[in-house]
Image 1 (cartoon, rainbow, N blue to C red):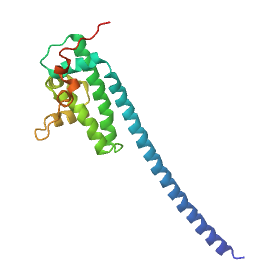
Image 2: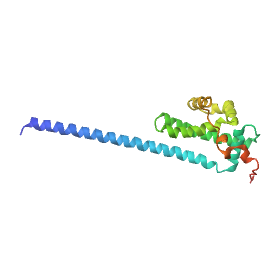
Image 3: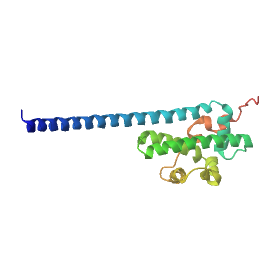
Image 4: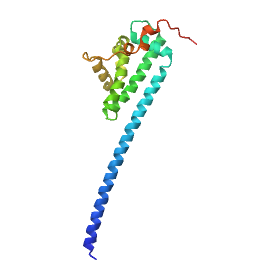
Length: 180
């Protein structure tokens, strides 16, 4: 038996095994990355659902409608509730922005969540709050994106209170909330 031939065959088999192993690992990494992206999207949607669940409270929706209107006086509790909810949403949006910038979220999903985030601060009351103190509550990465989009005169964001009747102050004109 020729030991050189056996050595050559062994090297060929070894090289083939290395190539197969590398292909297998590449497939595993791709599947793992894909799974991680799906989990991140589910996590963002779960956060979105938790924020939306809070809107089942009519007092919060009314408080936001008053806040967004900017002309109707609010009491300190209503204003605080609206501002804290907007801050929560914008904190959620900061995560969305990070995922988008890292390539984990596609443009369509990102734009959906961006539209809502911008809509929350695009109305008269939201803009006033953003200019006075809201911007300072967030890192520049987020506030720069919001500022840029709020100043877009060609494609301005639509305020939520203009897009959805439930957030218009007129919808709450004759509504009495219990104060239990």
